[in-house]
Length: 342
Image (tube, rainbow, N blue to C red; front, side, top):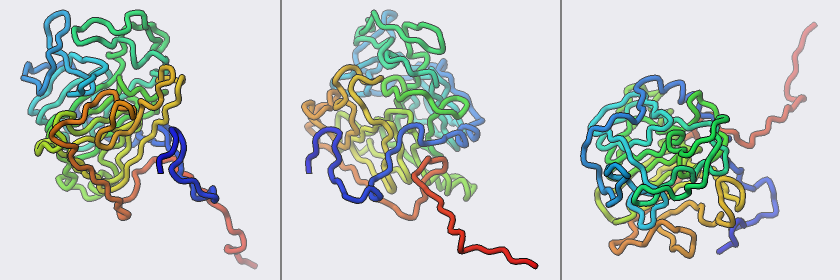
């Protein structure tokens, strides 16, 4: 069944069978924000190490820029990133504006990616975008952030990349105080996973925390997520294995990826409504493998080496993470309870 854009693949006569619709505000991540009380990462550290797979793009000062999406044939922005290499972080908060790359790092406990809550300006995604030579892509754009007009929203976003990292707890997003950001902003708030990414919740000694972590490897309802390789879908060093409810605003999965659980995306693009510019809603999609440009994937080109393998297996034994606003009704059955007395 190939439905039209925005139409369901299957429609049933019974409305009770309709699937509940989630959006970014359906997920309360404040409990995880409270747990992330350890290392603070602000993005100012630059170890000067060689970054993996940089393009031949440089800013005005000659510093190398990294394309977004990483390794995409047709990137839409470039970042000058701080670099963290071979470091250990515990219950870390990646602060708003960090925009860093982490290479071969270990993350213990909760990794909480902070999102600027006042991100509802229609130009928030686009202000500060640059070409490969560092020149502004939209020089006439500006955005309002908390009542201040800014000419670059990169300091108010969190576009981060993890390369060859190990996680012993979940990766979660939300506003610094645990509240919900106003809008989904896929360019400025993006988490990219490249290389051999390892999630090992068994390393957590607390069994209750182990159970909690397994409910959701990635709880990123406010972010766009990229994982795998644009270049080689069959690369042995580009693989991820995730458990529980994998939650993202939008997600692009390429290469070798296994999910033992559930995949939930929260963002439904509507043409003409921010952050969608004009009639471009079909370009905002969840990509499993590779689409052609005619099907809306304007970033990728199918690699000659193959597409890789993506396997999603539902696991009914893993509970969904706490804090989900779901369609639950409680109806009292008054005749089933009675209090007696004299």
